[in-house]
Image (cartoon, rainbow, N blue to C red; front, side):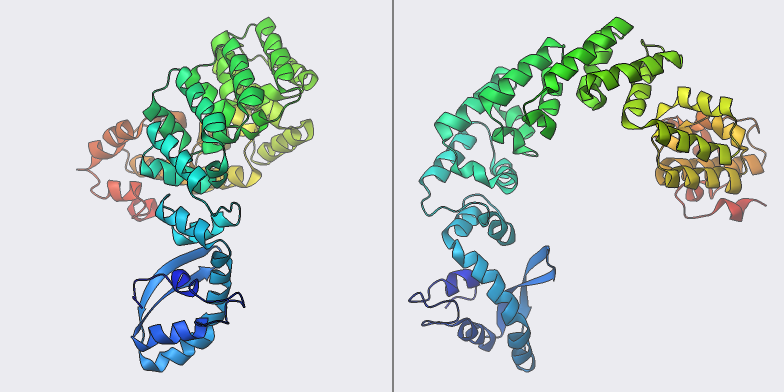
Length: 424
């Protein structure tokens, strides 16, 4: 018996149908044979969802302990895998799945003949899929191995190529998320693609929209979107902005009466339909209720913002009405209580509460605070001035420029040194 032979293969050679622990080779006997040789290959889990294959060197003093403690787990693992041993073997050897992933996938699909799966894999390879692509596709959509390759799979691949994508591009688009291959071509992909093209959506963006689970269902989705697009066009929103909204925001699929009401509110607040902030504000209104917006406003009031400052911040950055109270309080506590900026100063730069706190706000504000304490930059520097800069520009202008004056400035930016240590 080879030490490299998988346990599943060894156990599956049992004679008769009397069960895993009966027959010519019991599980305990197999384990003992492996332990005698000083090695064992077994599946050991760190959690129910996290399995890895390990090789252990076993000394004689630990053999009994291993038998007592690993046998129940191995029985569970190999009972499951033996039920569909051919399927598991095929998924590992032909599709490149790990043993653990193959066992999991075998709970969703089962086959004892490789003819259809072989045909599916051959079609995928002929259509530009590499082994890596195939492994990703089968891992996420194992049921694809059971479809009719010529009648079901090929027409979909041809459809994506008809959109102007090369075979290689189709493979790279589908492998991370093959859900589109599970959609009906006639009922979902073709009609919804035609609708998207009617509102000037690019093919790249059409793929992104078609991936959304909501687009796989029938119903009034297109009807709502068509009605909402009509409202936007009447309001003066350019078609390019509408296309952007359809592709990236879920607000466009809102029930038409609610959508129309929110468009009216956004217009009344003074947002310009020609600018992207109009779309951001519309998204904010569509994703929050009136009571939620009132709660957000009350939160900003507690930080000392006036009504005008709150509305001004919303007009500049509509996303500030969608942020969680935890996020807002954390940012404002840092900027006001630790950095020393006045609440009104932060209100004039709402971008500060919308950006990534740990990666953008903290390191940049810490650097600027040191420079202010050392008198190297003007005290009236606006938050938005340095928070909006690209990373390279910020480092050049506020870190590298002052390295001779403050050698530790880069360490402040990286969080290795606190600005408090350099305040003197």
